[in-house]
Structures are given as structure tokens and as C-alpha cells.
Image (cartoon, rainbow, N blue to C red; front, side):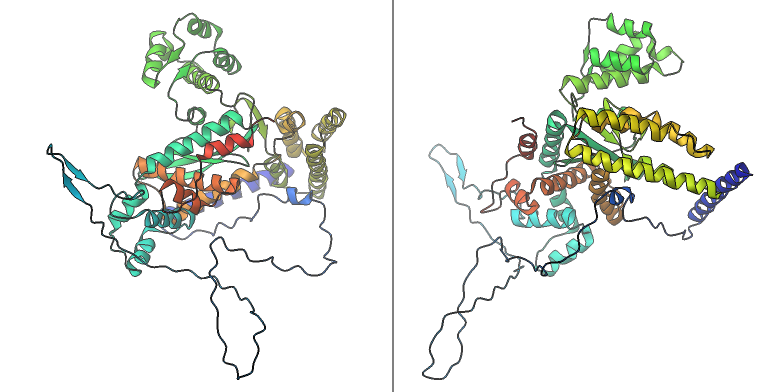
Length: 511
């Protein structure tokens, strides 16, 4: 009977999905996709209760504007004989938005030898739109999540004579320098950070569906949109712009772990060439060795290529001692891999239950997991070898139990198989227990996707990813994006903001 209930629930789910797909194909409005504001209540359930407010109510602190305060005396009408008893300050912050136009009369000279000398434009002037306008456009479009038509309407309403094409050029102008800086930030993070958290979401580019991958941690964020989210794609992204394929010990170890036949590995090791400049050179090498003619499982070309990519990652000193934290998506299972506890608990939470016995077993297991999770959080603050050993034994007792609920027992067995990845925190206490940071980072990309759908050109795609990642990185480093853009665009009187990769490296520099 229980099995029939399970089959009915599964069939109802399939029917619901088919109805939604039919409605989508007919152009009808489907059911609203209402999602919870937070991925799981497990993390909140393990937080200690906040004490009640017993003291006096706290108000906001003193206002400290980031601009110079100008003082202006306001006179009062008073009768004769009155005495001045000082002044009562009243601070008012305001914003002045106005368009300016400057015509630079550049001196033009002819030297005695016939050369023409033209006076240079002031620093930061590059084109017919100034750096302050350029900064405002980038800030509003990426940080303010505005649309191109709305931004165009606003600029025209304040007096700027600009076309849609010119505005689009401002968004893509100098994009390559920002893309390069974003890549440097990724390299700094992969070389120095003790862990990186990863995630992906749907994206659309050039009229086709794709995926945006996020890589980051508490101090940096990086995005990249590609047509695939395979492990080959993820390894390619981890090269951080390098195009080489490398055969080294890390590459051969990867191939052995993923069941590439020993004779094929020996054939690769027997060749003198171990570094290949690009994909074409690497594929030609595999073709000469006969890899492309083999029709076996696993695909030797794929496994060998993944191994060579991992060898390249390691050769550039990326992720040499870092943990990769993910939500258990297969493509992210690289190197030292850790799993998100929130996603693991969600599997238990979403199980379909049909009897009181099932519901009781589910509630009991979830309670045990919550308590265990709370102790893992405490361990991160004060790690100790004896405590780690006790937690490992406790993990076994939780996930090796038999509840009598067959589906739950199979799930617990599956989670137990991931013991090393779920308990990575015991060996590496700095590793978070969840991927909430990645999900928070990727929301800005999802918002941008909802506002302006996809991109058309590769430069537009890479520029969007770079600006969103740099904006998030500035936020994590405590740098105002407005100041960052002013420094890069040479706005008059700008603050000096060094390349962001320097700040990222400084965060993880050993004492």
C-alpha cells in the first residue's frame, strides 16, 4: 500500500509538470513560482535565541556624510535689544543632478619643422562623454539594475544629448579592462583563498539558453556565462583565462580516479610533450595516440581532457590547498570537495510521507541532523581533535540508523556515502557549512536576467559578468563601487583604488 502511495505521488508530480509545459507551449500563464525567502530553516534553527530587548531603545547614530559639509548662517528676525546665544545646527543632505557641457579649445601649433602639436585633453576625457557621466551610467545600469530605455529617458530629461547606441557604447566601452581585472581577482582568489563556494543558474546569450557559474567566498565574487555547465566547462573556468593543457602528476591522478584505462595513461606518460598551448594542439595529440577512435565507457577523450585541464589548474597554483564547496552538483566535484549541509537536509525535508510512522521517523531524523549541525557550527569556532573524533562517530550513528521508512533509509545511506565531503569542516574548520554565500551572490545576476533577459555579443556577456562580479567584490572588501568606478575612469578628484586582486591577496596573506 505504501509503495502505491509513493507511485501515485510520483505520477501526480509528473502530470503537474506536463500541464505546466503544455501551458507554456500554448502561451498560457502557468502557476506562480513562489519560493521561500531562505533556502532552509535549518541554519536558523541552530542559532541561539536572541535575548529580549531589556535596555532603552536604540536610535540611529550620528549622521556622517561622505562629502564636505558647507556651513550657511540663517538669520532670524528679532526685535531690537535681543542677544545672540549661538547657533543651532541642522544638517541637510541634498543631491544636485545637472548636465554640463564643456567645449575644450585645444591649442594647435605648427613647429618650425612642420609638425602639428595639439594640446592634450584633460586626464579622464576619452570621447565626447565625460568620465562622470560614464561612471553614472555604469553605476545605474549594473548596481542600480536599471534598464537601457529608462536610463536613456532619464539622461535626456536632465539635458544630456545622447542616443541609445551611444549609451550602449558607454556600457561596453573599456569593458576589456574591467574583464581583465575581474580575471585577476579570480586568479588571486584561487591562489590564496582556503576555500571557494560555487553555484550556477540559468542564463541566456545570443538567443540560446546557457548557464552562469559563480565562484567566490567572503572576499571576492566572479561570474562567467557559458553554453554548458559540464565538468569540462567548470575546469576550463578554473584555469582563469589560461588556455594550456598540462600532463603532470595531478592530471594522471585525476585520470586514474575517473577510471581511465591504465594502458591509455601509460601511452600519455610515454610521450615527451606534456604542455599543449591550446585545445586544437591537445586534440591533435589525442588523435595521434588513437583516443578519438575508441568507443568505450567512460569516454577516454573526455576523461583525458578533464585530467589535462585539472593539470593546468594545478600548474598555475590554483586550488592547490583550497576546498571547493558546492550543493552536490556533479560538475563541481573537483579536488578537495565539501558539501552544503542545507541542501543535504533539504532532501530529508522534502521526502513524501504517507503514514504516521513515516512522519515520525522523518521528524526524528531532521531533529538529529539539526542538533548535529549546531554542534558543527560550534566546532568551527573552537576546533579540537577529540571533539572531531566524537562528531565522526555521531555522524555514523545518525546516518547508519534504520528507521523502517525504506525511502528515508536509502537517503540516509546515500548521505552517509558523502561522509568525507559533509565532514570536511572537521579537517578544515574555515570551510562554511552551507552555500548560502553563493546563492546570495548569484541573486544580483538573477535580477539582471529578469530585467534585461540575455546578451547578444560576447563582449556584452563578459562585460556584464565582470561588472557584476567586481561590484560584489567591492561590496565584500568595503569599497564603494562609486569610488571604484571613479578611480578606474579617472574622474576629477577621485579616490585611489588599487587593483582589487591586491586587496583579495592581502586578506589571505599568511601572518
